[in-house]
Image (cartoon, rainbow, N blue to C red; front, side, top):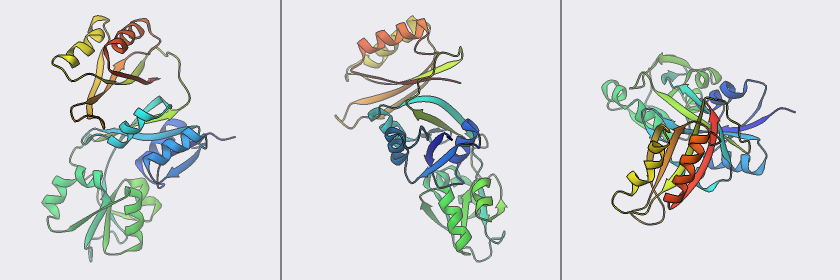
Length: 269
């Protein structure tokens, strides 16, 4: 039986590329309409794993994924980093008759400098995904899509201008979510979410155990909590596996200091 992996569809998106990068092409890939659906598929067991975008190098955290990680019993068991190249594409390969440019809102944001320089007056339309933009462009000769090469090929589009993203090193990080908890590999990362009472020095005190036990923090991202106006959740990545002695000791202390503590998973890099 093939491994079933849910991802944010439609086919042709960077999420699908991340699935193949992590699992190879022999998997059964299940496109979902929303990030919520990916989580539901993995929680219900219709997919053994889900692949969700967690952070983009130029746009920051993908907030919906972070919110859902708080609520789920699923764990992160892997991470995939995909270089993101955005291309302006049309059915004809030219811009004759084009009246609007469609893409995912995040993609439009990642290309705004180029768009403002080259098409300051062209209508921009945000759609559900880059794959959806490519589909629209394949059906409507007045639409240009901004998407990756895979989406363009899938829908028979031609590249008018390649690599129009403002950040040439633009990447998106994806998390593999599921029931699997991987053991220590010797080169791992651990993700967790913390919250502290809102008082002076609370964040500093919270993170002291990491320094004390010599655990390096590789990411620290704050996110307003849904409860009180001044409550924040902190998403933290640290080097090492939760089973490693020094990480385990640091996490045990963190847990005592934190108002909220949730281990999201340890996984090989």
